[in-house]
Length: 111
Image 1 (cartoon, rainbow, N blue to C red):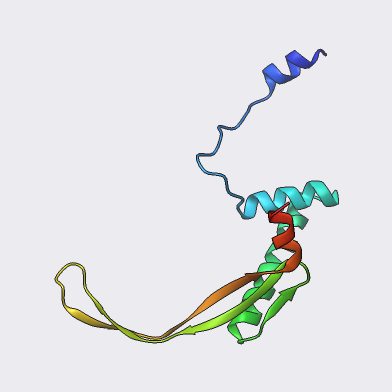
Image 2: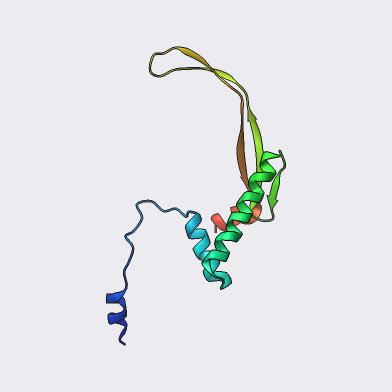
């Protein structure tokens, strides 16, 4: 079958408005690169994300060599204003995730 017939029968997905990679894209890439079924790739992606989330919830630091480090930072409470009525409100302290890129990722971005 000639290539133009194959391309004519192929359904192209519309281009994304913004350039980003989501969980489904990670699963797809893992499936292709590792030569495993998408179901298994999705399981592996979920295990990694759950493990990172569990460690951060416990206050632990997660370091992936040459990629980066995930940590938790404590934001202090502050006084804010309600935009609807201008009333002053107290915003409570909270914990937020922080990512710091590693040397390998920084080099890859700048080459």
